[in-house]
Length: 366
Image (cartoon, rainbow, N blue to C red; front, side, top):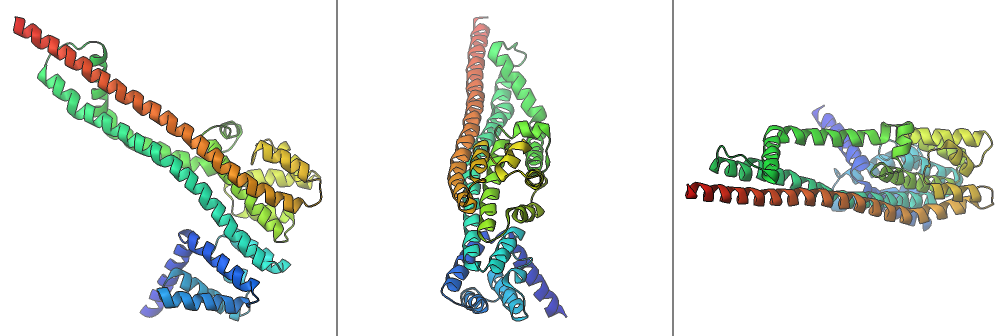
């Protein structure tokens, strides 16, 4: 009984890790499976082959080994690969692979799944790289406030008790008092605001959000979601799904913000509009105005699936450039703010030193 419970815990942990943390491993797994299937290997044999090698190198408790073992058992019991993956991979990946199985293009679907994961990794990396410097600068600003507010300014005021400070020196006293009274409340407040901002990204919507989506930082989220959505949509259509069904499937696991945009576009298409016109009439500028124009042109032509795939690949590169550019704006604003703070502190300290020197000279003269 205890052994059975431990095994369930191991499987549950492996499932959680493989789904939420093991994206890089899943991408490599899709590529391996695609290559084996492309060389004529049966799906069960391919899964068992990769599983055996994984167990040999990492043991039976490793998340990917647990996943492959579970898939092999399910396939032996008559399940398809997509059905065997239920709970181990994202809904989007499962739908894409299922579409590939139904259309006889499983190899292409697996390659598409790997391509989507690589695209999202590149987009996320661009965002994280852009956020790293502003976070460091904000921490530096908090450190400067603490140093001057708790150490340097109090040392000056203690050395010259009762003095009437003037100009920048007076402002330094104000900043020091503010830091001592509010800094330890300000820091958690800023953290709370940051958390609320990130929570608002997938949930907050309406006319105000449509306006905010044009500008940093909300525009970065729109670009991230738009490029991922377009690439996933192109992959599903390549796998043989009708565009309306692909949109329905993508909306199932989407955030409320993205689901509303997909639903509005889908409603427009069901009213007889092509995809580009439906997105344009929705009024969200999602995924991007230029992409909407391109989709409007290509929607009425033959070979729309190939054009959509091409647009997805091209816009991925453009999206990364746009995200990097917008994050540079954020970085530049943070540099200016922190630089202004440091310049103010240094100027204030010099002003305090001058006033202190003048006061000492006055005392010595008397």
